[in-house]
Length: 132
Length: 272
Image 1 (cartoon, each protein chain N blue to C red):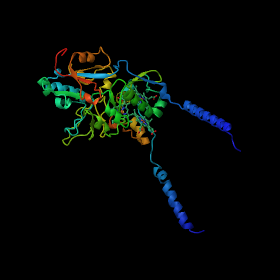
Image 2: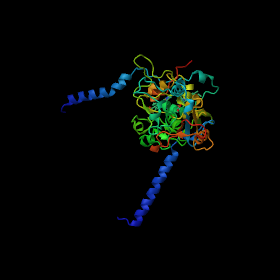
Image 3: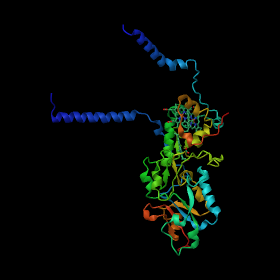
Image 4: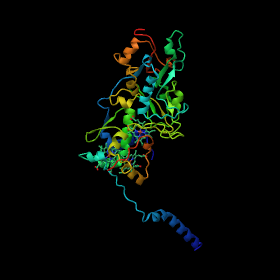
């Protein structure tokens, strides 16, 4: 075989580069985010539920927020009737964040884990941190 | 094998049907749960066919009368004060007769009107040039006549500013949440219920559409003590229409054909 030494050395370099991220993260404690819902407002609720069922919110809250903003800003419809039939005032700052007033421990805990940075807070005013 | 015309048409027809059918089926299957719920206007929302203002300049007497109105608007909407006229953000401001109504100066007009500053803000034109030039539909005309600004879509191209003949639009050359050299924040007191804007977007008066939705009057109307009246221009019985029919009113630069929705009462008594 010709140049087997070079080929094997090359392969070794290749494999170690490819494997680096995996090796690097071994032992790093990556904890699944646990968004906290223990805010004063949510504590007061008899039935602790979001504007829509939890599974839906978890997967679709960004789409819901998009619909909310188009509805409020473009169509002038500021009341949201949820799938359970209850009514909510459409507002990121005054509705979502009224309940979820612990943005750091709630929204950010997931977003940091997923490395998403919603730019909403460049304009929308984040709540004063609030948790029990 | 060759196909004749008849066979070709048959195959083409069947494949079209198959294609359309599949698309419909796929669309039907795709779930979109939010669609099940709805958005509606609030129960107290004020509605109109075409919102408009009448500004009665005789009600603006002292410096305080102007300042109070400007403050009412700018404070609730988190309008920054950059402290210099070049970067100034204006939703409502005052300007002299000459610049407000160029070409309408009249030798015999009441002197006090000629010298008085006028309260000016977005005209919510029926034919808004800003809307025609906006490439992203960030600014658009609502069915109730309000010329709206959707901050989420604004890319800061400033075409609208070039198009607006009234200077009603301001661009954020700086970060509204920032501070000046001496550490003074540009927004003195943040209203936590309303967003700010960012550097790089255009903003202007929105007719307090967020207050109308709750059944409240626009902030300037509330603070003006009768100096600014709002209502439905399409409704002959509305207060604004009554005022327009009783008083001599003028609009800003009507010759441009933008059809402003703000009428100014300039002197003259009832039935003048």
